[in-house]
Length: 190
Length: 96
Image (tube, rainbow over all chains, first blue to last red; front, side):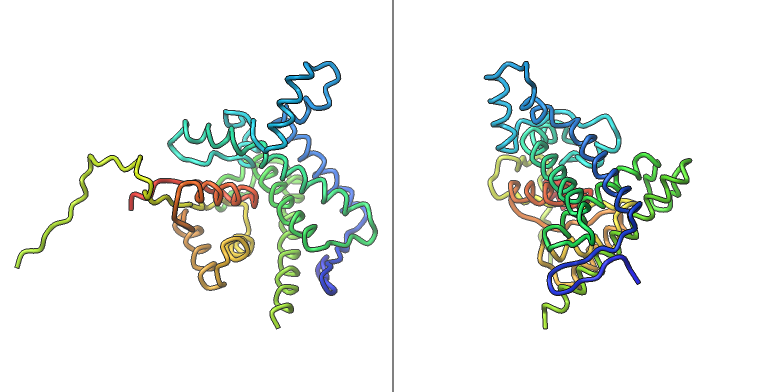
């Protein structure tokens, strides 16, 4: 039996209390991590900021542009928000400036939706929520893999056994959720 | 009978030409599940399962696969979408 079961267009997730708490906590940490790349989003709530500058920045953020020009130094953020070009720094910089803010905001929105769904019992996922779960589970696994130095196929991860356990559990959740999404889509084809 | 050689003019600069083809490349990574990569290729690009599985295995076995080709702006949108899904993707001028 897997944690996920669909009925009609809704997938129910059966998680233990501590599992839901852990997933919510990780999603919250992901939001904080991604928030490092969204200074304009923070500026919006900055009480002592230059108001004209803030509103221009907020507008750019709403349009999904105005992002940073350099790749993140944190390897986890660098994997979540990768360069769009290999061997063309100028093109990568331009692409990042235009698209990174939107990418960050969509990833944060997905993680926020995951946290919101975890507050109900049982956890019920509509199709858009299930899509947010798939993406956030991926982002969490990418983040943990960077922390565990899992960089190539076959890497077992260095050090932290507990973190490796969480990484594998997230993979199990994603795999079984995907299976359920596929079963749901399969039924719809008939 | 002599066959004309159609060698590429290596000094030709095609960067400014509007119909220069670009490609979206998905790179292998040790994190994403094969079932997820296949799902992304089906749900985003609309591939049928055999084509999605072929591309996924190319990524896995060869380290990379070209998953789309076309105009530069379109490829930029694809790359951004792949990054939404958490896949490792870049675009490049098609020099094949």
